[in-house]
Length: 170
Image (cartoon, rainbow, N blue to C red; front, side, top):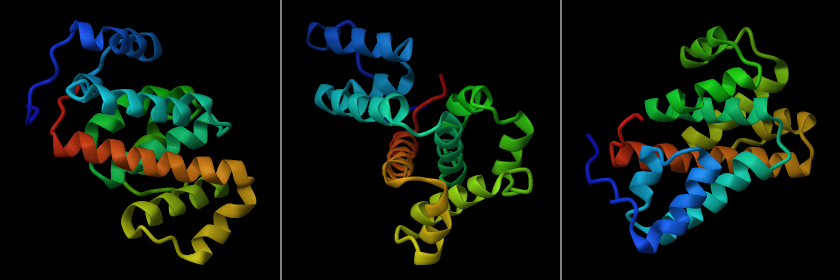
């Protein structure tokens, strides 16, 4: 059960934002139901996460792999469950996602392993060792490196928000 109530929907002051969330996300999931307690935060969140998920040049498989890894590292089951369908659509198998959860990475490419090591360092250590950054560099151009980094940072924010407020699964 969430630690604070979800926002009351269909309020005049949030009507336009609710329409936009529904248009972009398909429905108002519990995460956005919680965010709507603060319309300015909900709007900023929507803008940032829309840029990360839908406007960056990063390949969908890389993006979803990173999101799933952050969910595993932060024990954010909501995030893992919400993104499983996206990871599957991006080309990963259910088996690979279970392997990711168990830290068995043998069925992942060298690119994926480098990205996962970078994700692990950002999430666990904050400061990424030079050798970890150099290992990921050959797989991504500068724009993609910014987008990989922003995706990891953004979904660490998401998982921390979800877990701190104990947001329920949809």
